[in-house]
Image 1 (cartoon, rainbow, N blue to C red):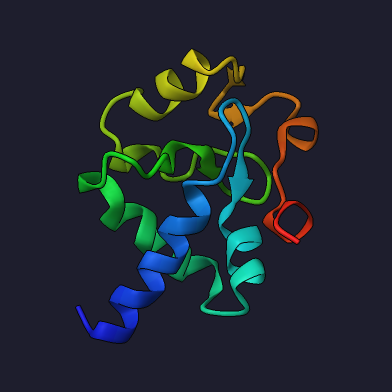
Image 2: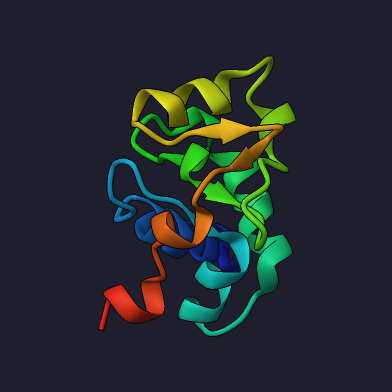
Amino acid sequence: MSKAKENRFDDIFDVVRLIPHGRVTSYGAIAKYLGGGGARMVGWAMNASHGELDVPAHRVVNRNGLLTGKHHFGGNKMQELLESEGVKIEKDQVVDFKKLFWNPSDELL
């Protein structure tokens, strides 16, 4: 991995570490907060974060609240982690997504 990409991933990890317990955000919201790189870059970082125990990647979902990254966790681990924090999931989607949505652009002024 290039040094620039590695640094970008570290910036993404830093934001993800700030997502409160029981809340979720989206790939796009993180990308927008960081000023570029796109939602795909955030997705790549979340996939690369699985060795990082302190990065709660399970709290990052797509813009509609769908658990699109769940296959990277294996089985239902992403859903189980969210449910252990009180987040209700139905058909791979966060229930009350708008209520639980944490927007770093608003929260990290």
